[in-house]
Image 1 (cartoon, helix red, strand yellow):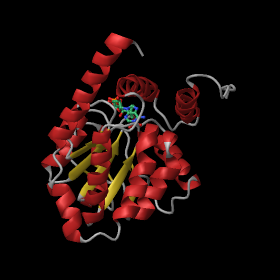
Image 2 (image 1 turned 180 degrees about the vertical axis):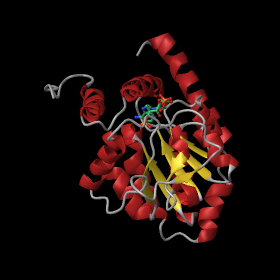
Image 3 (image 1 turned 30 degrees about the vertical axis):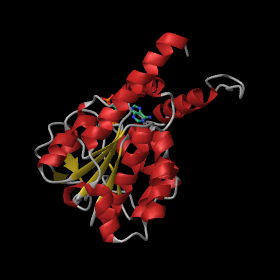
Length: 255
Ligand code: PTJ
């Protein structure tokens, strides 16, 4: 990896970008993952590259939903594994959620490469690879329909980070609660999830781990109240208003 000087104004963003590039070199990230990351970066610019107030509310609701679930699963794709393997494993540990590799671009060796990255980060069990990955969710049109019979197939809640296309709608149709992490508040995934965390996966995962830890001893009633008070459409609206206000200010004063 080429050296990124610490005083480079975009050092952090470049370091994150390099995690994606290294992920591609390891067959973890799909080629299209580079494009997806660029799209995410563009939306992150609009958000001011920080975790916003509505994102914090969504993180709290996501933590409550995870703790109320009987069988939560974290769906792991190439980009999320390359960006935050340790935090994904940590989230699975603190919340009791299973880890399942589920990818859109099923080229040879990718499932195994992602599993390896998670195991290196401390995962004891990784679903979605091997003989139990023979379940099917027919409502999903892409190869993402192939799921683990010990994982997404029987999950009540699924976290889908950096997601494309039609899966969220399909999962909701069959009664699953979907938590999305997506920097684009306008995407189908964002619009159709039960809870959408519009934030960079890199920033929100450690915050989600902390929130789960914080709420772990809360009563079921308290957790239910957090969810009852949560309105995803309102949160997405708040994110769009925030972008609008930010752009209005920048248009007058510059960045
Ligand atoms: O690993 P695979 O085979 O499952 O493929 C994964 C990708 C990401 C290639 C695939 O799901 C895809 O093509 O996704 P899209 O359609 O580009 O959608 C990805 C969404 O995630 C976009 O709305 C991006 O804005 C958003 N995104 C990108 N990077 C981040 C992000 N959201 C949160 N954090 C990020 N770091």
